[in-house]
Length: 352
Image (cartoon, rainbow, N blue to C red; front, side, top):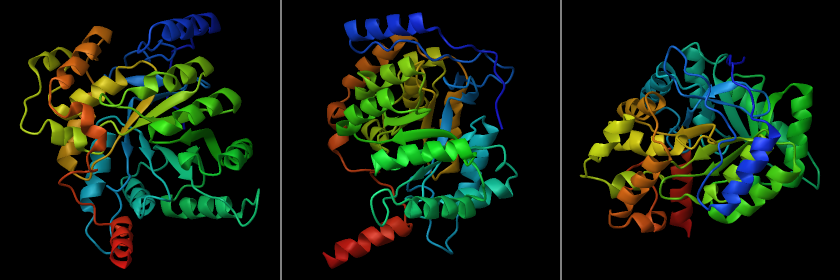
């Protein structure tokens, strides 16, 4: 399964020049990756550097939001997937660590008839019984195949760099064997950015997934330029800072200048800021609310802010009290995701 493209990769000279400019001008990200030529459907697409395959620039994340207790109602999550799909998104990112999320994605993607067309990005979180033991990783792969009803995954990632020295070579062996199409690594916290950069430089990687938002722009310093320079595609997580950005702007109107790049709500404001970085291949946003899904997916069409507008967006956010403290506030304010993760966390709190 591929998405057709007519885009070509930038040559290495432009890449080296851009990296030099990035080093000389902090906060400026060189445009190594390309936005694919506009299609008739108006969907914003990006090119995967190593293959020239194109994918839509917005995908669906599933952490917590798709974790539902067995037997509880979950039809709303079918509508979230349907809304993203109908709006043009094709990537769904999940993990065995996300409670029942794999089951939910597998069931509904199959029910909607899109499982064989979706770009499924999954993860491995595994150690082993002993050094270099692959049994846990293989068991995880087989479990994911059953839950997601997929024999082959488009992207398999080393989840949060767990056992990365062993897992990345193992994933590349799976790639050679045809079990996965692409290999990646992930993390969601700034202290691990330097490790991500090291792996981008030394390993055969196709993707890196990193936290990146208008409130947390640290990935621009090294990770995104390094990935672009090496032809590594960039997935980004936490565009809403685990809903904390929405809490920050609660009751505030979207600024009038947002009309210039087609942002009709705060979700599109935050998402368009992320995907307007030309080196972001796909931004992952999550929700359990179909109405919010409809707001999110609107960011995948229309104009994007240019560099000057991106700076203006940041400057506007800096006028809002508490913007510089977003990362220190509790996750998902005012929201509840009562799945098996939340149940286990509650049990642990009760015991301790």
